[in-house]
Image 1 (cartoon, rainbow, N blue to C red):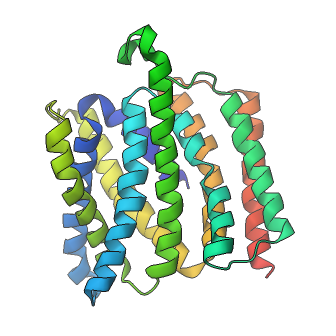
Image 2 (image 1 turned 90 degrees about the horizontal axis):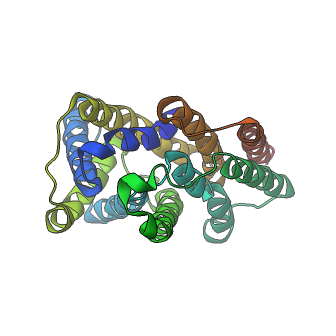
Amino acid sequence: MFLWSTGFIGSKLGAPYAEPLTFLCVRFAIAAVLLALLVPMLKESWLRSWSQAGHAAVVGLLLHGLYLGGVFIAIDRGVNASFSALIVGLQPLLTVLLAAVWLKEPLSILKIAGIALGLVGVALVINDPGSIITDPAAVLNAKDVATLDTLGIAFCVLALVGITVGTLYQKRYCGQIPLVSGAVVQYAAVAIVLYPMMMAFEHEPLQWSPTFIFAMVWLVVVLSLGAVLLLMRLLREGEAGQVASLFYLVPPLVAVEAWLLFDEQIGWVGIAGFVFCAGGVATVIKAGSAR
């Protein structure tokens, strides 16, 4: 989850140098090419049918397009990295509840208790950093801050929907799809969809500064190639709800990282939230292993 949390930091680090759709389109195109080169090196098979390719593409559009697109656009509009992570941090609650209905995963009292602990932790961290907006004056005029808040939160909610439904869809339909070649289709599908949107709505040139290159390399290699493939393997081997519970660790981790790198404030209330989040994760994992 540490690796996953750094995605919010990387997006904020690179945001001044590229518009969000451009940033994501370039990232996923590079990731798709690199993973395609890895498939024969790892001696992994390619997808066996158009049905598998379709399922992989849907996961890509949900898990990478809608989720990361929402986060990147929200941060580009001035929303705190920590606040974005906190909204998306509600994902375990939605995943466990939907998994009980869609995937028939059991919803035990212990699992519900873990969800409750995690929600308390997220609430504590939300109340600690303070402002939702990093620097409204740097993004819009003061009179437009209310609009910025609403749109930023709306994009965070879209991201929450994307990662929740994408996680469940991956668990339900992609269990037999090869991990690496499946990820190639995921990233390629998102890049293909984002390209015309990028050309239509974004016009600022991409700035290949050292900071942007570092952010891009980190997001492609560590996140798109490392953390995402690890998530897919965890979903294949464990319950969707149990895996999703790990995401309760992301908001406090992002809050700490954003404090260290961008001076987004965190205090004792936030630290207490971290403890509650960790307790919630441990409880849900225990509930899954006790079956």
